[in-house]
Length: 222
Length: 272
Image 1 (cartoon, rainbow over the protein chains, first blue to last red):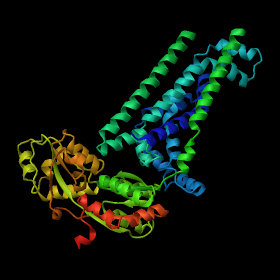
Image 2 (cartoon, rainbow over the protein chains, first blue to last red; image 1 turned 180 degrees about the horizontal axis):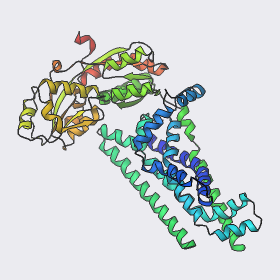
Image 3 (spheres, rainbow over the protein chains, first blue to last red; image 1 turned 180 degrees about the vertical axis):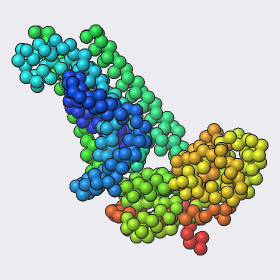
Image 4 (tube, one colour; image 1 turned 90 degrees about the vertical axis):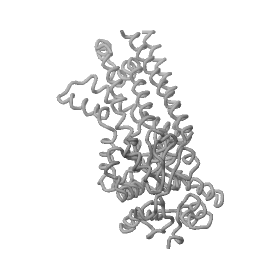
């Protein structure tokens, strides 16, 4: 059992959802309540990481952030090391890959708020911040938590992108799914089996939680 | 009105709880993982078992800590070019080290530390018999008993290239083409070859000598002159610290050389 890899994966998962929480709420709410030209294109772009092969995402991240790219060189000049093969690089990759997992449930949750409730709030003189904290968030929270749980669970399991931009560096980029792959090649079937079982349990728990939350949302609004 | 305020109260409590959990989990923080960035050494997969033993000996003798990452030399070459933060590179093919040195990415031209050999391996229950002339492989192939045969990917794994050269030399490469399964590096090739799902494979002698693999089947050493010598060179990369330098020196000491020899590597001085 590769404990540092598990800790690293958990940290990556937490850091990913800490970033995706505000981003997901802003994007999800914006897409739920606004109508504008090209909304379909924005939604398609946000969903793209869901259908793109991880290797394609990995390739473009390497091209965009690698040592030979302008972005990679700027980062190197600022921080003294490259973005790829580091935790920060994995975090950026993870946030991009998980955007649809976080944004879509949140958007749906905001959309399901009855328009009359929000109109009533606006008519009674609530400012937009109070509408967000007193109306939108209390009603949409199951969707928000669902988005975060899905993004977290998906981060633990992400393999292809991490393999390409991570480089399997212990305590830095060797996440638990990479550690399973590595243990198999080290003929450590027991270690690989333990970690696989753990990921299986975590995935089942995550799905159980999202279904419980969506049932709850349905009971309340349905 | 009351129900609504209680709803938002409950919501606020939940938010606070959630935020508290997040803060707690981030306590150790991803920043600390970066700050404690350890001395990472990129090593060719054929070294996996020998280096794990060497790492233990090194840490015992010097009380210094290193982290090993195993993979194919060609992949590491690419990753180092992309700026991967390795401090030392132990390649299975010296060409990669020479190219990095030419680009000025290394401390010096490096040191030849070992010469590798390849074996033909048949897992338990395989219809193929192993022998150093590949007669058993040819026979099994002629009888259609070989469905899958594992080697490392010759595109970027030196041991895959050596396997291809030996198979071409014995004129079995063309017949074997459609049966080949390619490991991403030589230890994945070994994993495929020993799994029982393939009838055999060619991989590093150093891996075949490890107990985990030896118990899974039979092997025969392939003559060294059937492929270009697997001249393995190591080098300190620019930015190598004290610990990496100390490991680099340790690799050339009698303790390390004895371990390499035990894993079937020919040592450079013997070869000359």
